[in-house]
Image (cartoon, rainbow over all chains, first blue to last red; front, side, top):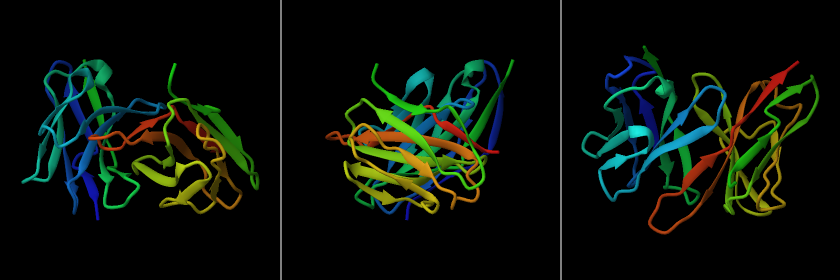
Amino acid sequence: AQSVTQLDSHVSVSEGTPVLLRCNYSSSYSPSLFWYVQHPNKGLQLLLKYTSAATLVKGINGFEAEFKKSETSFHLTKPSAHMSDAAEYFCVVSDRGGSQGNLIFGKGTKLSVKP
Amino acid sequence: DGGITQSPKYLFRKEGQNVTLSCEQNLNHDAMYWYRQDPGQGLRLIYYSQIVNDFQKGDIAEGYSVSREKKESFPLTVTSAQKNPTAFYLCASSIDLPGSPRTQYFGPGTRLLVL
């Protein structure tokens, strides 16, 4: 069965410093992986998705993630944090083992950015 | 403007009352989904529909009902049988494209509160 673990429930960085949000997955199949961002009281916005075309995936707002099969990881990074990056981030794996491709969500990592 | 709309933004339910949350999309997506979000728990799937006039239970369907009479609409009813309905409800839709994992796009959410 597929699962996803976000290793930190809360990450705090200073503005202008790098961001690292960690995610490990478990999948019996070749996984489809996603990162979504949610600002308070808003819906989820797609940041990026892994399509197996390239292991380094670039997303919106300067974020990127690297798929590492040997480590079963899909960590999200950004070189320099902005105040507007403060939000909750979800790592997600697609349950392609079923025909519906339903999503399995991590519990989220809340990112705080200090001025 | 293409997108997913949810209404109302806030909804109050009295004891023993059924309430219906609206979800509409004009993206021409085939599949639609309802999720419940509680603090620290990520998103949990309530119901999903791959096609008009068909839908399946997700992980936490008890106390909820849905219909899919039109492609663009997927309303969710929270019945009186749902004993703990206070949560943030998110609707999503998706479409299958060749060579790309099924990707879900989310509406802005409805916050349901019990009086």
